[in-house]
Length: 448
Image 1: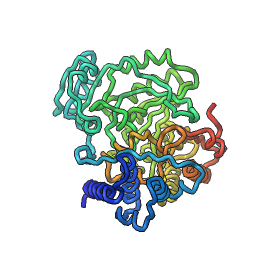
Image 2 (image 1 turned 180 degrees about the horizontal axis):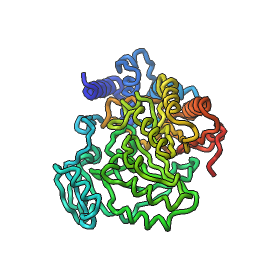
Image 3 (image 1 turned 45 degrees about the vertical axis):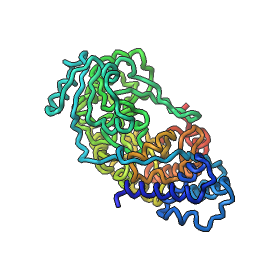
Image 4 (image 1 turned 90 degrees about the horizontal axis):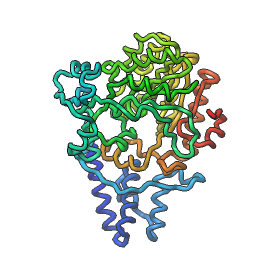
């Protein structure tokens, strides 16, 4: 049975079971029991009936507590309070992610009138001769006049539409660090919006409400605005709202940015990517302040969760080529996933990394465990029913996001730091969006 049908049937069975066995429970209580039974059944691969077999129910709270301990077995023996997110579970077939060959070829190219003669507009039209090209007054005007698809459906359609615009307002922002976490001092340059890759965990699924990929044609405006925004020794980068290099062969952004930052050697500029699209990077001459960065995970995680991206080996080989061309590189073990056998899998990644890259060529390494706004959970379930990342013990954490418990996160960070220390001492490692106590427990130096 296909995964999506299997999960649909699982949910149907649990709803019927709950209706029969827990007639006295109200709608909200049934919703929580359905959610817990579903997650336990999926996580353990057991029939729903087997879960409640032999249980002495004794009322809703006792039943819920029993199910919570089974759903979160390790977290339940810790000191942290179990705060689950037991939202209503809805599954349908219309928004399920359907992988294809991964090649990006938009059906439609929408070009704002103000940039119709731009280099980017002309390049895109030449690159995709079979696309339908439409001139629009503005993206805002187009969206106001167009009936939009439901949010998840619209997100699924984004690879069909390419918008080339004149960005006017949103080039820079400070890294939106999560509440009560240590701020890394990073600055974000918004170079496009939307991504052609499909990662099961991507926060853009919940964040984006525009059915397309947006690329600004007016890079010169960035250069002008930067003069007022910059400050000495700042660390600035792309990759927050899109992949930095996913379409660099068309945009040519990297060439222009590297050339521009020759004038500002005191500023470090980072390109973050999951691709191996480094052709322009290798051709560019730089002043030593450019860092090319890759997100790293075991190949198992890449295969199951990072669709259309470069493989682990392709990413590391691309990094090796960048180093040979004189660039610094950095790596982001983010998000880290806690699963059976995670230690040897991440150990392999670390060994593969240092087989190709010398420590002296690494600008920094960041570590961050899987975390997300609760609202994203139902979207992941809707789009990626085959996912296993939600089977982990994810509870509402200190910042309101779903996270692994503190002891899980500390264990993962300690392991990766220890394994990397075997390869090189004094690597510049920092935690992404983590609380002060973890920095202190791991004896990491705070950025400020």
